Image (cartoon, rainbow, N blue to C red; front, side):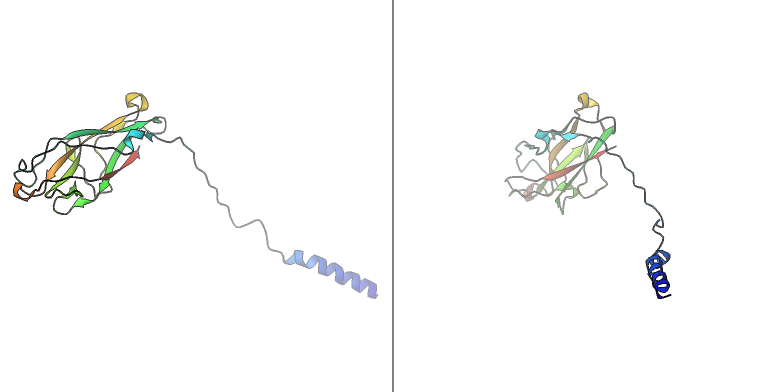
Length: 181
């Protein structure tokens, strides 16, 4: 009889974990999907660091605050644009603005005083502090055989009248960002 009881106890011990085991089927699932797409465009190597040289101006030509100089054109060049996934591109700029000149005037880090710089999109000064301030010019990615060039202009902007503008260097930098649609 001891053998029967021992066999029963051993059999019970071996099967009892199965009786108390939790259901391993889970309570739900997460299904994750996505797409790997081709990149939109590549910024051309000569547009990764664009140098714009404005013409020299006499400090007395700016008679009043708000006076501007002639504009100098520059272009952001893109290459290898994928017009299958994207159709167009817009640009925005960020930079340190001049407190007196406002959000559309980049501060001068050179030694001239009383003057800043503006970047214009189709004649309208860009706002350097508005992160939703994308260019109004929307460039088609199929332009120039998939290598579009986005035009902008830069100009001097008088923050003070001629008596407050001193001669010297004018230097500023803005960072551009691209938005593809």
